[in-house]
Image (cartoon, rainbow, N blue to C red; front, side, top):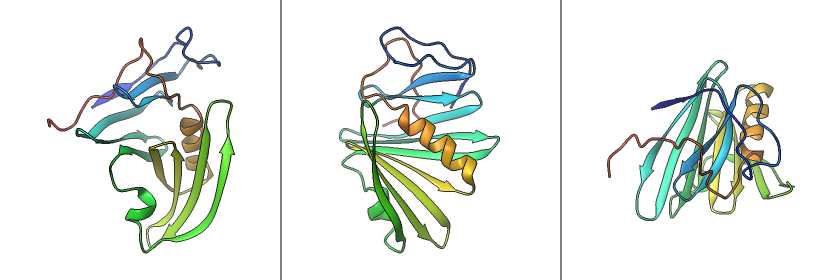
Length: 156
């Protein structure tokens, strides 16, 4: 597991400069990158031939954001007992984000789908939603050549 601390903007990688305590991090070698705040840790939990998954986690506030891509079960499909509260699409300058709020016995799960990549978070308060949406909106499909990458938790 690596701690993601500090940060600098990389020329040609982002249209907005990063704040002092933010870092752009590669999800995996070909899945693109996101911006996370200092204090976040993350790792790759699945690195197969056709499927990848991982998470970002922070202690303050306590939040865990999962991500998955490839031929892996989607969050919406995995939560069969969940009720869809709402669905909407948000367009950014670079991406179209399909958002779904699910509700089950565990609470509200916010899911964002960008192409073949899913992000999800158990929303416990408005701060969680803001942190999640900031990370999702920062997604870039291209790999950042000078940014750190998440380390694998498992050896495949």
